[in-house]
Structure formats: structure tokens, C-alpha cells
Length: 430
Ligand code: GLV
Ligand code: MN
Ligand code: MN
Image (cartoon, rainbow, N blue to C red):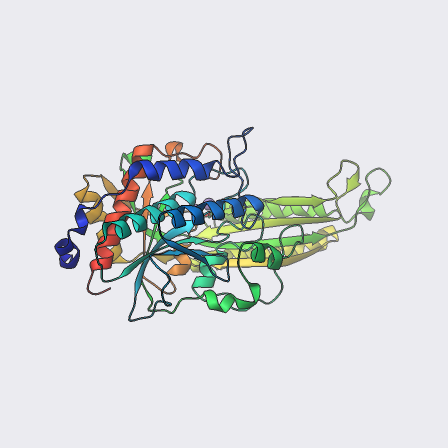
């Protein structure tokens, strides 16, 4: 690997502004915060998400940078308004997402976006001319907590959702079209959000680990080797609502009783049959959800994960067979109304080396590890080599209000991102 270009410019002596990074993490963490739980709820395209997006754009503008929103609602921050990158004008992209799960933490996604902004600002303020342009991005709706299309923004950038088979809606049936418009996007122009295959020389994502590995080993930096595959199915179960006191048991089509069997089926598939690594029903919404009425409909999600794409596929097939059996046994209809698939992907060997080398220069203990969480990087892998940096999660927890990382680790991660980006920007061949 050659770093000569970057070394010549003195760019490796650059450092981020740690106080600015931590201030922004703190300020962003207040948007959508619930004082009662200590958690953050900023589901994709919700008013809180829009507030966070506005915050990021303001910070970028104040820093003299140029944020723009693409048709999918991604915020792309650049040094100046320039033409679309091409194979001859490659960028190095860094980012993550601003949206959260319901009652989640303040770092998942947000930290990576703020760090990307910090690195971009640091490089631009240094005035050093670099052979590739650094770009920061905040991908829209990575979690899919409100609109059931996780990885929405990165899928659009990768060109995977230029056309949609049906109008996407949130779990309450509200159309994405309007929510996306309010965020500055345009459902009819999704194709314009995709980036040409050779235009991104590398995509780097910094993220909290969300698991216990780094904390247990004492490593400060995780170099991600591969990211798990994931299949998310949103199901609608349709039975018949009725009076809970007057409807005989044999005359019922209880959508919630059917949903209960689906929960157990998912648990069985991963826990007993071990067809995939993990399976989770995380969202269950019965209607009308009142004590003395049989549930007429239930909307629920099933999330299946494995690092082997074939195993995840087998688990899905087994689940679909069980859904047919459950529908028949309970007199209900079960429809898959939305589905998202992200294949397991490996990170790029050269980017892993750049991250490990950067950690070493900073005297930070590092190790390679897989990611059990999904990330936008998975879809960016369609169009670019990807690298991911993890920092330790206190207690190994995430998607909960307790999610946290020590400030010195947040700073260390951003420093590694800066160095890795500079090495990548300076690489003659990628
Ligand atoms: C994404 O945040 C995931 O659920 O892994
Ligand atoms: Mn998450
Ligand atoms: Mn995340």
C-alpha cells in the first residue's frame, strides 16, 4: 500500500476537534430524547428525524460545507456544490444514519454521521489538496422502525430501489411519499439517488459495536471483517374481530393467537432447529388492541439473520411454510406486505489494513470482528469497497436507552476514521 501522496502533504498530522465532535453528539442526542426513559426515538422520516436532519444541515452549513438532500432523503455533505462524481472524479464516502429505533440510544448511526462530518470539516479546513474528494452522508431510514424499508437510503444510493412495486406506507398505512417529500426527497425520482459504480473509491462507516466483544477483550478499535445478512418480513395477519365474551372458541379467527404462533415459530427456527443464527419478532401491533375484543388484524415483523446467505434463505423458507400451516390452523390469512434482504458481505482487505494501520499509529489496541448488526455499508458494498470501524459499547448493549460509549472511545474512533480516510484518499489504486 502506498501512502506517499498523503504523507507528502502532511495530512497524517491532522487531528479532529474532539470537543466539537462530542458537542455535536450530545446536541443531536437531545433530539427525540424521552426524559422518562432516557432513550431516543427518531424513527425514519418522523418529525424528530426531520429535526435531526435539519440540525446536521445547519452544522454543515455553519462549517462552510454544502449539504444537499437526494431523492431518497439522504443528506450528502460536500466541500462545494460540484458535479456528480464519476469514475474519473472519485470520492471517498463516510457516513451512517440519523434515524433510530423506538426508545433506542443516541449513538447508533448518529455517531458515525457526526464523525463523518467532523472528518470532512477537518480535511476541508486544513486546505490540503487531496486526490479524492471526501464526502459525508447521512443515509435515510436505516432502521426501518416506522416505514418498514430498512436500509432505504443506502439501497437507493446502490441503485436497488429505482422502481417500487407498490407505494410504500408506514405501519399505520400513511404513505412514504408525503413523509419523504417533507424530508426533501421525491419518490418519483428515486433513480436519481443512485451513484455510478466506479464513483465511490471507498465507503467507510464508523459505528458503535453494539455488542460485548471489544469491551471484553479491552480493544479500543474493532476492524469489521464481515456484516451479517438479514431478512426482514413485515406480515399482516387478517382474522375476524369479535366480542371476547360472546364468540365461541371454535368460531374464532383470532389474528393475535395466530401471531403468537408466528412468534414461537421464529424462535423455534433459530433456537431449536438452528436454521439461522438469530430470529426475532420485534414489532407486534394487534388491532383494535382492546381487552374485550378479539384481534381482527395484526401487523408484525420477523427479522432473520445469518452470515451465510443460504442458511438465511432456508430459514425464510421454513418460516413461510410454517406461516401457511398457522394460517390454516387459525382460520386467518397471513400476507407478507414488505420484505427487505441484505446479504452478508465482507469488508475490503485494503480498507481493513488502512483501519488497522491507523489504529496502530494512534497506539490503539485493535482486533477484527464480525458485525451481527446490519449497516448501510452492506448496500454500499454493491458499488464500492467498504470498511467499517467499531468502538466499544459499554455493557455491550444497543437499541436500548442504556446504549453508551466512553467519550475517549468516541474520539479515538473518529481519529481512526480520519486517518483511514486520508490513507484511502491517498491510495493510488483502489
Ligand atoms: C440495524 O440497526 C440492525 O438492526 O442491525
Ligand atoms: Mn440500529
Ligand atoms: Mn446503526
